[in-house]
Structure formats: structure tokens, C-alpha cells
Image 1 (tube, rainbow, N blue to C red):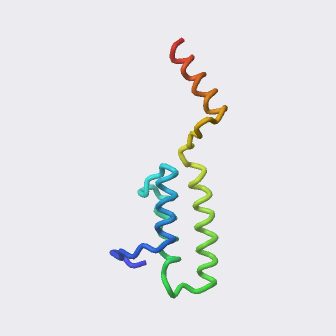
Image 2: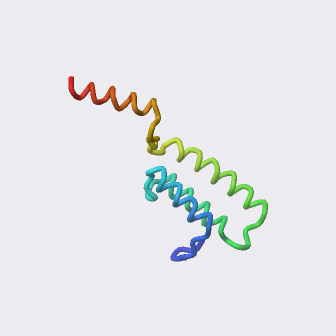
Image 3: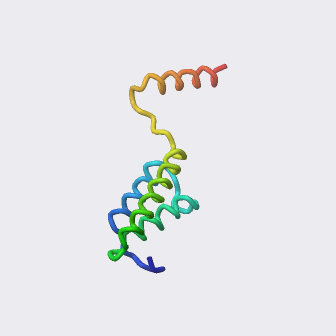
Length: 93
């Protein structure tokens, strides 16, 4: 997309939402790459072959970003509770 373009399609918004949920800032190189790919996919006249390649690269980039995500603690998860108790005991020791 052109510099200064303020169009944010559904793909760009979805990538931004993933980044926020994963706790990854948009200024990292990989996050910027994902946003750039999403913007390129949002262009109305993107050719099917180019779109297929962009989708594959975006998917790969998002998978790598997901590995860097801040883990979400699930309420009531026995493993998380056990880890929290262990950490509490370590701090008291």
C-alpha cells in the first residue's frame, strides 16, 4: 500500500487484534511484516497468484508471532494454579 494510506481493511484489523491479544508491539520487525502483508492483501486488484503467495507468507509470519505470544493464564487451570503455588513458596523461602 502507499505510504500515508489510512485504509484499514478487515485483514489489517484482524492482524492488529492478534498482535494486541498476543502482547506483541507493532514496531517489531516481524509484526511490521505481518501488517505489511495484510495491507498488500487488502488492495482490491491483487492478483490471485500474488494473493495466494501473500496469504501463505502471512500465515507463516502469524504462526511465528504466535510462538512469541505472552501466554494467557486460564482461570481454573490446574497447571497454572500449581505453578502459582510453587512460585509463592519460592518467594517465601
